[in-house]
Image (cartoon, rainbow, N blue to C red; front, side):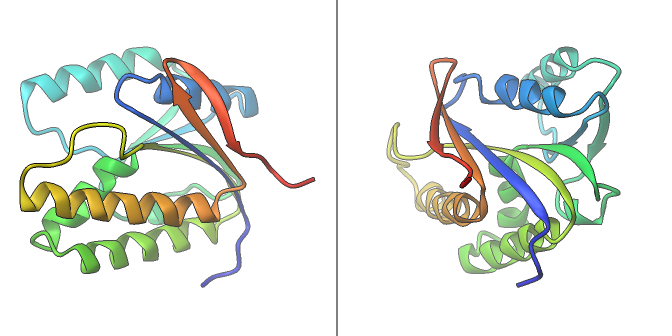
Length: 177
């Protein structure tokens, strides 16, 4: 694993828990010119509308990159960077590997390791699992496994982890003094 130079804050929570809004607030508190990395691939009109709402939440001070896989290749060193979100990022790897969980996880962890070898502050957003319905398809269960393992990997690397509950930030892991 590369030498770690990054400070990492993982923000997790359920759908509509306020995790993206909270992560944006953190980034703006740390920098007048934060970077936003969008990992989504827009696949339909509904999702396009959701992305548009996220864009409206950000002001002109943000530099925005749309990158679905190799986030570490972007010019992020020394910056305050918000990555939204792990779930969509993983989906890209999962689909690229024809739903091979082990291969997708290996690609993702390699990319996280490369990212965290960069100096900077990274605020990473992800969806929390285990608080909702159990997937009723084999593919859904495989993706749940993938995301659970990926979330655990990032959380172990993180200096801070915040769980969003109904718009309220709940510290789960705080930086060591």
